[in-house]
Image 1 (tube, rainbow, N blue to C red):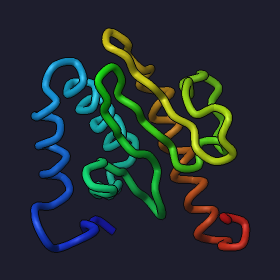
Image 2 (image 1 turned 90 degrees about the vertical axis):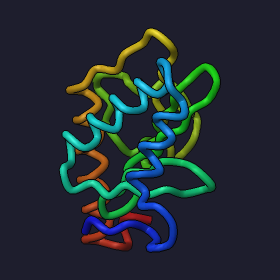
Image 3 (image 1 turned 180 degrees about the vertical axis):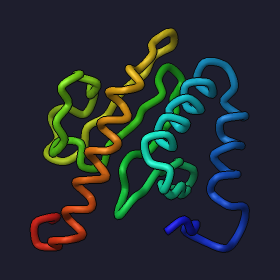
Length: 137
């Protein structure tokens, strides 16, 4: 399961390492922490690099992306609207029918256990869609 999206160029994990290093400061630290939590929640996660420079974590489909902007690090869950979020981590893209996001600003931290629970729920949702392709659409 752990194969990169493309065999041309550096592997996605290296590109993500480079993005984190280039961000530096709180944004780099935040993206690195969230990446670590994704990997802890799912040791089988596949890291990919899409859309001209976006880190993506996948397991039977996209779990979430890790985008960085001037004032926020954004973790967008591809099927977030279908996930239970009892800890209310989702604080962005709340009006959409499919996606949900977590915007992290400087000085903020995300509850690690709640975030890992969201990752595991996204894995379960992707797995259910894979097992029953009609329901996953």
